[in-house]
Amino acid sequence: MEELNMAVYEPDSSATAVILCKLTDISYKWGIESFRLVSEYKVKIKVLKPEGTSYADVIIPYYELPNNAMKENIIGLDASAYNLENGKIVRTKMKKDVVFKERVGESRMNLKFSIPQVKAGTLIEYEYRVESDFFFSIDSWKAQSDIPILYTEYNVTIPEYFKFNIEMHGAEKLETVNENASLNLSIGSQLLRCSGTHLNFQGNQLPALKDDSHVWCADDYCTQVNLELQGIDFPGSLYKSFTQSWEQIDETLLKDSDFGSRLKMNNPFKEEMTALHLEQMKGADEKICAIYTFLKNKVRWNEKYALYSKSPKQVLKEGTGSNADINFILISMLKDAGIPAYPAVMSRRDMGILPYSHPSIQKLNTFVVAISPTDSTLVYLDSSVENGYLNVLPPVLMTNRARIIAPDNHSQWVSLENVGANLLRSSVKAGISSEGVVTGTRETVYIGQYASRLRNKYRTAKDSTEFASKLASEENIQVKKLQMEGRTHFSPQVYELVEFEKQYTVNDQFIYVNPLVFLHVSESPFKQSERKLPVEFPYTDQVSLTINLTIPEGYTVDEKPENQRLQTSDGQVLCRYIITQQNNQVTLRYSFRLQKLLFLHTDYPELQQLWELIAKKNNEMMVLKKL
Image (cartoon, rainbow, N blue to C red; front, side, top):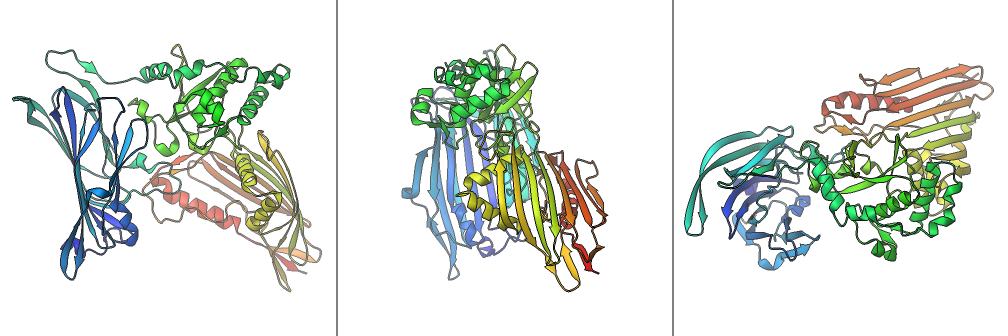
């Protein structure tokens, strides 16, 4: 009754629901011919707000390989909703007709169900058991969720024959017990007695782990327990190791028919490529760009990332494919042109960090193309790139852990975090009228991610008129003329010239003008008073602005912002603001540099304060006084 009367979760009043209890028990039993892994789950959730009713829609993933004896079975599913009506507890039991199965991959299935009669105030309970032939693989146990958890417990009982490596990480505290256990396993009509290990982990009042701005994958910071099977040691049998090295994973990928075999494919555009006249081009970069542009005109990216490829013939017939489908074709074309190219496999930033110390092919989910135009240099490209260039990848692929897969043990680790420069360089020359109108030109060069973002804006606009209209709205200006170079090309930069007018506040005595004219940071993105997760920036960043303003006749500078240098204590974020005056000319030189991508949550107060100061500086006004 107390749980049904709960209206708010006091430690987090914003919570739409709270997990009151979540129990997970993992154990082993003997199947027909081998061990089976048994996982039992019991969950109790209190719905606090209408938005929390979504937790009545449950998806349970499991494995089921077609034409394969190995599978997972979900058994004993039971779910109910409890509501308080006229002072009485009313239970609504879920019926079987709202339980569905769906295939989501060659080996992956989802069991889906929706618990009925759920609203704000409802108490949800469900339980089920998974029996798995994959006894060698125990799923990671995540102690946290995207809603708060009042109590959670994880029990694992492991027979002595299985040797596991146990790893815990995350900021929240768990109570742990690791003790010896005596086990009785039924094998047919016989009883096998053996020793083992019992692990127990308990968490109390764990906060919600919510997706946050400036975090790629919140799960990377979730308090969790990972069990990795190192080996199996049955009496009378040789020890069988399950530990893999990255070198073994390299070999597995190179032998895979949907990966390694694709690296041996013939260039499907060999004859058509002769029309490119690559032999007349001066450098490798020019050849790479010509090949990539040619390919992108033949095959369109379907906005899906993948590690493995389907048949190249099917891809070419459909004219569309995943980045992996198109990347393999790109590699074959580059090799045919005498340019070495290799897959650089990774886990996308939004899919979690790739673990160096625990090699796992399951953690890999896509790859980019590493190209070697010379013996000492590498450039990177991916077929998902629509608006970028060499070394200008979608930020989701700019991971610090990618592995170039090359034959003859030449694989290597690389970081893609800082592969290209990202620079915005702008010059404004303008005059201020006595009516407070700033009229002039802005010339800007966009390089790297800045060029990619601008091209994306241009491509998503209906036409150049709409693009100019959006620019005028964003910058609060009138666009008199707009000229761009490189806006649709596969090239390293975009040049933009804007002739503009901008109205500022004016009265009988004063004109108030922001000397930046075009702001870099209008407001701080860091609004939270405190933060539990680190801050992750997508890429390094550099901005250089020069503004020259002519003061109108009959006016003088009454007030202008002070020169200021703002930076973090380690100097990895730096902002300079230097304003000078000579006669009727005011010159502002503004620069910003971000060199570090990861800041710990303990750095957040400093980072928040810095961005607030930068935003404040961006919004400071210069006051012109009438003589």
